Image (cartoon, rainbow, N blue to C red; front, side, top):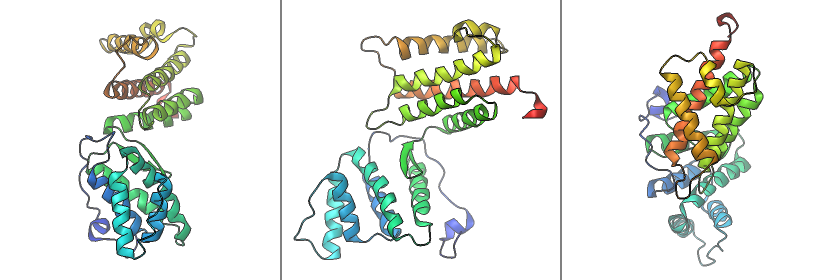
Length: 269
């Protein structure tokens, strides 16, 4: 933490995570935060206008040349932008910050503060490595993070890659690929189940042989049935909801971690 850190940053105070209520939208406060954090990172009005205009493919107003008028123009541009373009602008600002970031810290600070803002305002996105990606519930985050780490440690790169693909699908903008997320999440679980079972059977056949206590084994079988119907054999007019996809990815990830840990001796974890 630098000497210029604020009181709350120095002492570790921050607002609690708010329940996610904003996904396919960019409310006024989000639009303001994207710009204000860019200015705080050292971008000037002219550079900010160039960045915003490039993303929106708008011609800068040649009649605006003073800093105050340029800032007003930038605010009008982002206020009128489609919601998903606001997050494109955030990514571009992050990239542009590097041009004048001689300390090598401003990009990380922009990403950290923007993500913290999202958490405190119930926005279901976060910035990772300069990209705006999906942010799920706390259970979703813990389950998917543990799944990837556990799969890699257990030597299951295919399953880990399937979880990565599920996260990419559920993060797609402007519309998440919910069926793709379900397919990849269940594919990851099937990979793990086959490895634990030592067979090439389908997940539906393997479930009854897994060391999952009743009645949780029945719940897993129903999850597999739901995923098979909604992820592979979509009924006309019955596309899975975003919340259903998030639930499947969360549960599939958590069960995968459980199976791998059950199959791994405690001393070797």
